[in-house]
Length: 253
Figure (cartoon, rainbow, N blue to C red):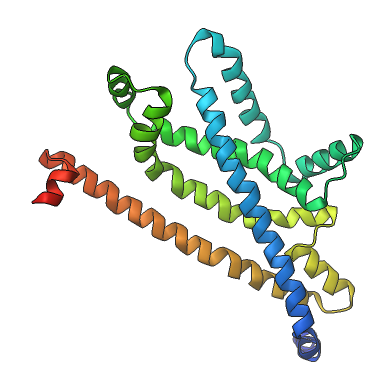
């Protein structure tokens, strides 16, 4: 076993000088940016559509019952479908209709579909964390539903929504590795490419692992910072409520 480890280490050292060159760095950087852009585009649009989905899901009235049921059905279905299965389904559906979409576009569509369901549920949990009296008070002041969400509910719900939404975003940076199964040049596909060229798996995929860490760790730290800021703000709000004054009055004292 010890000799086998030395052989692997020797191969790594022999190939490292040839592997870590400028052209390979550019190729890996392109793959890393593809991974990042897929996540930003897919989860960013998923956040927007998730807001719309929850707005429709919370629309009151018997006439909107079919809409609410459709939104619930969407969330329950796509939160339980594996991303790889959905990716293949979207790809073959697009090709079946004769649409000439790029693989990157197909991957983004798949990410939007599944992230809308997950982020929509995260947003729903955040909105539900705001007490019903807030909705009732806004209604008593003749606020429209959009005004209530914008000025009353969302400022309180962000503290609950943003941390898990950010965690989902960071998680999906890693899940984009599944798009390599349809041939998209992202980090995992780049690792396969160099491994097929004859470079050792430890060198190829070890480098890819480090690049995933380079992408994910700063995002994770940013998420921790946002969560800490929101936690401090929530504590300040609680203190203000406890002493019975508004934030505006505190700033003037």
